[in-house]
Figure 1: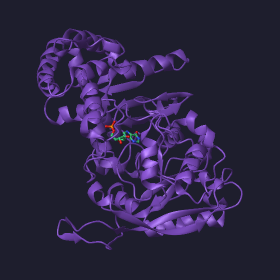
Figure 2: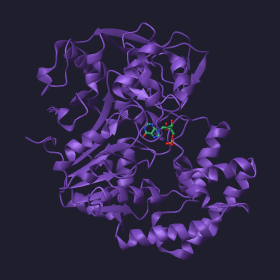
Figure 3: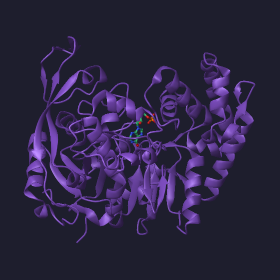
Length: 494
Ligand code: IMP
C-alpha cells in the first residue's frame, strides 16, 4: 500500500513550527508516488541530507527516480553557484540530475545580497540569519531592484539591472567600515574575494562574467524554464504534485512575526504562489510538528525553551557544535535543570543546523503557537521525531500562554499582566513576555521505533497525541518514529 493520501492530486509538506522538523524525510516517503515535486520558498538557507550529502537548494526529491520533473519555483531565492555545486556533487556520486527546471522568474541571489545579509545582521540586525543572502534578495525583489534567473540569459539586461542595483548598495555601504566589508567579500561563499574591488566594493565585471557563465551552463542544460506554465499544465493534466515547503510557519515573512523571521512566506499560501499554483488547488497540506522537542535556530523568543535565556545564549555560540557537545552525552534529558536537559535532548536527537552547524534551541511543544499555525496551514499535521520520547521519563506540553509583561496594545485589546492567551500572538514584543502553562505527561517504557501503525503506539503516547489533536483542533496524518524512511507511518485522516 502506498503513502499518498486518497483522492489528493496536490499535496504540500510544510512545517508548523520554526523549521527543521524533517520535511525532507517525509517528502522522500511521498515522492515515489508523485509525478512532480516542487519547491517555492526560501533558498539555500534550507538544508537537508540526501544520499549522505547535505543539500540546500536541490529539492529533497532529487534522488527519486520516478519523479518526472523537479521544480525550483518562482518564489525561491536562487543562488546559481550553490545549485551547480550541488548538481556536481550528485553527478560525482553517480546520480543523474537532469529532470530539474528552475523558474525563469526565480529571484537571483547576487554577491551584494550575501554581503548585505552578513553586514546587516552583524551591525544591529541580530536575527542570526544563515548568511546566505536570503533577506536582501527578497527585499530587492519587493523593492523592484531584484534580478531574476532569466536575466542571466540576456547580457545587456543583466548588466543594466546589476548597475542599478549596485548604485543603491554602494550608497548604503558608505555607512560601514570598508575593512569589514572587505573581510566579508573574501568569505568563501563570496568566491573568496573574486567579486571584490577596492573601488566601490564590487567588481561589476567579475559579477557579470560569473553570472552570465552560470546562465550559459544552465541554458545548455535546458534547465531555465517557465515553471509557472509547467505547473499549471501539470495540474490540468491531473499529474500528482508534491510540494516541499521550506523553513517553518512561525518564521514566515507574512504571518505576524515581524522581526525574527526569514523573508519568504513559509505557509502553504507562500508555496502555492511560489510555484505558480492557486492555493485552492492544494488538496492536502501537512504542517509538521516536531514532538516532544521542537527546536528553533537563530534569535527570537520561544516561550517554552528548555533553559530559557541560558539556552538561547549558549546556542548563539557556533562553537557549541556537534563535536563540542559530544562531551555531554551522558547528561540526562530528565535532569531537573532544564538547560542541561535541553542540551541532553539536543545531543540525543542530533539537533545541529544543516546549513550553519549551529546548535538548535530545544523547547517543549507549544499548543498556543500550534493553534495559530493551524489557523493558517490548515488542520492536518504530521508528527516527527517521536522516538526522542524513548529517552525520557516525562514531557511537558504547553496549553496556554500567560502574558507577563507591561500593558501593551494589540489592536482593540490591551494585554495586561495575567491575561491568558489560548492562541499565541506571534509577535516578538508579546511572545517575549509570555509564560507557559504546562501539562505534564509520563512517557512510555521501551521504544516506539518499531511501531508500524498508530494502533501500535503505547497508550501513554496515544494519550498525548489525542490530547494534541483535541486541544489544537487538528488531526495527525503521519508519524515519524525514527530517522530511516521506513519509520514513517501514514495514517488515514478521513
Ligand atoms: P535567513 O532566512 O537566513 O534570513 O534567516 C532568518 C531566520 O530564519 C534565522 O533565525 C534563521 O536561523 C532562520 N532560518 C532560516 N532558514 C531556516 C531553516 O531552514 N530552518 C530553520 N531556521 C531557519
